[in-house]
Length: 146
Image 1 (tube, rainbow, N blue to C red):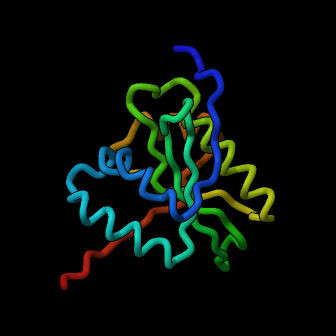
Image 2 (image 1 turned 180 degrees about the vertical axis):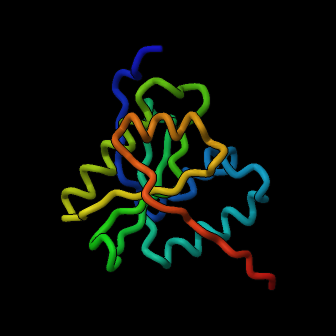
């Protein structure tokens, strides 16, 4: 497939954040939409940032990001929920999102661009490897029962 001509990637204002929910809901189909909306509202207060790829007026890709610093790596940009609409996958949308995030990380003086990817997303892993990412550790989680 060919790349999408005229694709525009830009940062969303916090008021525009709900525009990402249709793609986020597809990516997280097991989580009720009302819960995803609630979580998005909470994420605003934790300095969440979001970008979107537009094909005309249609959002065809989204990615969130967080900024931080850690002892082991210094300043970093953490890409979160990189989602491309299934109808335009393999047409440069994911690359455009990741290029935007890398540019932002460099602009902010970050030493590292990091991301988590579900272990079952083999196609995404191939993409990230092609883009120069490497696996350097494990992301452990522990569910805390309420």
